[in-house]
Every structure is written in C-alpha cells, then in structure tokens.
Image 1 (spheres, rainbow, N blue to C red):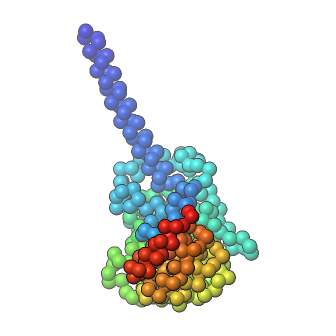
Image 2: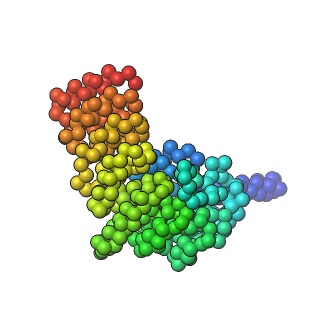
Image 3: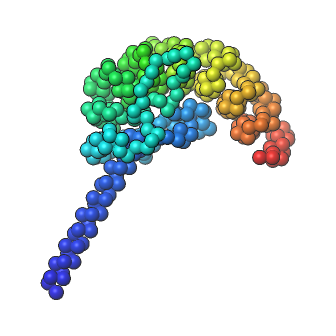
Length: 351
C-alpha cells in the first residue's frame, strides 16, 4: 500500500510538471508565431501596410501590441521568446510566405517594390532582433534601437524604422525623417509608415513646426519612383490629418493615369483630411479599376456630403457588389422618400 501511494504521488507530480512545460511551450510558440512571423495572407490586414485598401472600421495597424489584447506586450514572454530566436532565425516556426529573408532592391524601370517584399519579420542577426523586440515590447525608444537605423543591412534599417513607429513616441520623428531619404525603397516605405504610426497626441506641446516638418517629408515622398513608398506616405498623411497634405493629394487624384493602388491610397487619405470635399472623389466612381471605384464609394460614404447623393445613387448599378454596398451605406442620410427608392433598388439586386 505504501509503495502504491508513493507511485501515485510521483505520477501526479510528473503530470503537473508536464502540464506546466506544455503551457510554457505553447505560449512561446504562440508569441513567436504572432509577433515575429509576417502573415502570408495579406487580405487579413486590409487597411494596413500589407494591404492599404481603406477599411470601413478604424485602421488596424499590422502586428501592434493592441491586437494581442493589451497596451504593451508582456515582458515575461520576451525572455522566453528570446531563448527561441535561434529557431526563428533558422527558419523555424515560419511559413514559406515569411518575409524575413527579403532583400530590398533599388527602383528600376518597370520593376516596382511590393508589400510582400518588405522586411516585416525580425532580422536574422540575433543581437538586432533582441534590441528590436525589447524596444517594441517596452515601447522604449532606446539608444541601441536608434543605432540600428544606421546598420549597413537594408533589412535591419527597414525593420528598425517599423520598430520606431511601433514604439510610437513622437521623439522618434527626427530619425524617421532621416530614414525617409534612404537609398533603399523598402526602408523609405517603412519610414513613411513609421511616421504615420507616431502617436503625436502623446505630446500636446509638440510644436506646429514639428508637425509641419513631418508632413513636408511625407509630401516629398509622394514623388518617389516606387509606388509602394507613395502609398505608405499617403496612408501616413491621412492618419496624421495634416491640412498641408490637401493640395498634394488633390494633384494625385486629378491624375487618373496614376497607378490604381496609388489612387486607392489617395482616396483613402482624402476623406480623413479636414474640410475635404466630395467633388474630386466622385469622378473616380467611373474608373475602370474596381479597387479605385470601391475606394471612391467608401470616401464618399465617409465624407457624408449631400451633394454626393446622385453619384452614390449611380454607383448602386456598379458591376462590383462591394461598390454597390459602399454606395448604399453612403445614402443613409438621404430623405426618407429618396432612401426608400434606393433601398428598393438595392433589395432587387441580383447578388
């Protein structure tokens, strides 16, 4: 009986230890998979760096700590994750769609940088990965992180620009402005995106001159030869809502020969700007590109301009069902009789 009781106690202890180890391994794997690996399905991140098309809801930033349910990442997980970085650096816990081994390249004729080629994952250099991970975890703009922005490796510089933006402290704007002049397009794109991530409201005393300087650098990037850099600069200008951007974005919207993705991003930024008008948006409902028409319908919906009702009514017959849905959402403020007529048309839709 005594031997049986001892065996039972040992078995119970073994099960408890196994359960705790399993919990730790699961948390480490989950942390590394969510925080380090870049998603291969970019449609999941609509309205973000990976897929800059406008969302109906507020913009969700890619892989921000808030997505995991807390303002900052848990420091206890960082220690465990650092012990597993060698796995990530060697390709473990990542899918074939990971962007960790991306090599940025300079702009060339007829060759455009795409979002899936941006260095969104942690660099293979374990020291750099540790610095970036800890800075983002603690939301601390450390000297070590700033030194990484001068790394000879474009992947490290680009990922550092993203980290400075994720930290969110306005003090990082000077370094991001410098990085927006980087000769490598991927670094410029991530620097522009980082400028949009800065939480300037954290410092109410931030001077108007500083905000203007940020907007001016982003406006300069609208002339970049790489469309992805332009798209990220447009997104950042829309998020920062600086009136200085209105004339520059208006010039882009008036040029229908621009890339559909650039026009889409310009429309997504336009409706966020103060005192933006619907007149420059409505013509894009006639675009041959469905993504541009959808962005235009969404912009008109957000602007809620009564003068845009006829254009939205015409969009109810658009061949793209998503455009028709956005148009219907945009006429909810119409008079009851008009809205009912539009509603009848919508209910008879074949889709």
